[in-house]
Amino acid sequence: MTSPAPKEVTQLLIAWSNGEEDALEKLVPLIYDELRRIARRYMKREPAGHTLQTTALVNEAYLRLIEQKGMKWQNRAHFFAISAQLMRRILVSMARARHANKRGGEARQVSLDEALVISEERAAELVALDEAMNELAALDPRRSRVVELRHFGGLSVEETAEVLNISPETVMRDWKRAKAWLYTELNRK
Image (tube, rainbow, N blue to C red; front, top):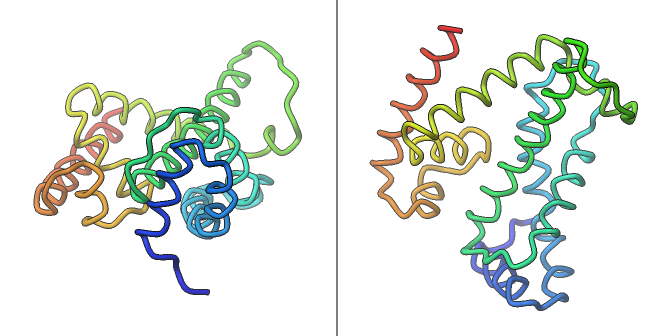
């Protein structure tokens, strides 16, 4: 199957933003494979043997996306950037919950899939990365967004530049500096 034209996806996103419910029905088949690709990128970083499937992560992100009432989608790249951010938040939330339970946090009822999704070591790494990303966002929000879009969202340099309305050269400069900062920060902890 060939990829849909970015223009077609953007037009449907805008129509959906404007309240056209049938636009969502047309949009889903066009975006599903890309959402799965983003989810696979996240899931590759998870330890072997976890039970959360790519499809479950896509479905959870999809449910949160359709709850975004009033969201004004700018374009295809903006949509996938938000999708990647949601997937990251889902996994970080699960990691935080697992990490809190390890430290004797409040017991809560969870599904088997959620309980087994992340190993203890991976949960701590994911929480540390999220904390470092939050620190970077406080210091330099644009560089944080570049990392989120490129690393987590899988967007190209050009797509990232389009979403952030900056030049591709600025994206590359921010990308290099942000990676170096994160590397230093994560190795310091």
